[in-house]
Structures are given as C-alpha cells and as structure tokens.
Image (cartoon, rainbow, N blue to C red):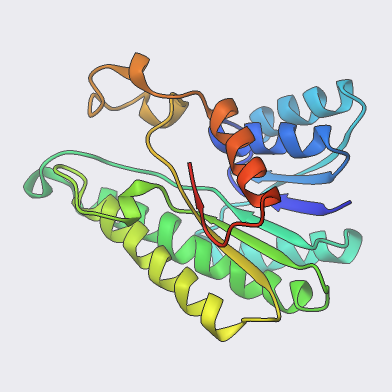
Amino acid sequence: MNTILITGAGTGLGKELALAYAKKGNTIILTGRKLLPLKEVQLLIEEMGGHAEVYTIDITNISELEHSVHKILKHHNVNFLINNAGIGSFGPFTELSLEEIETMINTNVKGTIYMTKIVLPHLLKHRNGKVFNIISTAGQKGKVNESVYVASKFAIRGFTESLQKELEGKLNIKAVYMGGMDTPFWEKSDHIKDKSRLRSPKEIAEKIIKEDENGTDDIFV
C-alpha cells in the first residue's frame, strides 16, 4: 500500500481521489489551506475504515511549505505525491487583475514546482515512488477567456514532461489531463454556463485510478 500526499484535498477532485485511494487501503495525507474541509474528508475516510492525516499548507508560501512538508516526511513514509491544488480566474485577458494573475501563477505553477522540489528527494528513495500532476485539458490547447490559467497549465505540462525525461527509470511521473468537472472550482465564476454537462469529480477520480492501474504513461480521462 502507498502513503499518498494530496494537495487541494478538501474539495473536488482532490477529495474524491483521497476517498478512492483510501478505499483501496492506502494511507492518505490530506493537505490544503482550509482545515475544516480537510477534517471532513478525514472523517469520511475514517468512517470507511481507512486512515488519513491532515496538514494545513499554503503551497504558495515556500517557507511554510518547506517546514510543513519536512514535518510530514518526518512522520510519514510518503511514496506518492498528487499535485492537485489549483485556482482559476476567467474572462478576457484585458479584464484580469494583476492580483488574479499572480494568484494563478503562484498556486498553479510555483506551488506545484515548490511541492515537487521539496518532496522529490524523499520520493527518490522509493523503488515505487510516483508523482501525478493534475493538468487538465487547459494544458493541451489555448482557450478563450482562459489565457493565464491555460498558461499556468502549459507550464506544468512542460515541467512534467521535462521531469519524465530527467528522472526516467527513477520515478514514475504522470501528467493527468481531464475536462471540466462539477466542483466548487466554478462557484465564483460564470465561465461555465451549463454546469450540468460537467462530469462529477468522483467519476473522474475513479477513471484516473483505473487508467493508472492499466499502466498508461500519461492519463487522459
């Protein structure tokens, strides 16, 4: 069984991945900025007989991140990292604020890179070490009114593909590409007009795990 560290684990896809992997007997390290959602996921896991630990972390704060992750690694033998945390602001590029741009780059790009950098030496000690970077279809093609969000996901796609080459044979690194999901990600946005057409994060999580078990290189769901 694995010990899996998941960022953005309190809601949406991160939550459903945590529940699905816990159901298979894995130990889950739930991380995110807000304690209450993480505790709620922990309770759900414990109710199904699984085990989860909770750590609040802001992945954009490198000193806090480094301190918290070293604390986690001191107490848990993590061998699987899922970089799931992400944030999006949508609309014409001319109307995006500098603060919105900074938040997306800091969370989606820097946060993912920082987390991977800090956990990587620990993962490399394991013969079965693994990293999933949740990218979405925004990392495959440009989209109207998603310029900076797409840019951030293209950055992580490049980061992932580069690490796959650099660490080939040493670490299992996969990019995960999926379309929009019906999650709290869209609550403060009218970018998606008809949310009923979106798939559930539970469905996506189950497909991600199935594709991984089938041995695919990258995951498309």
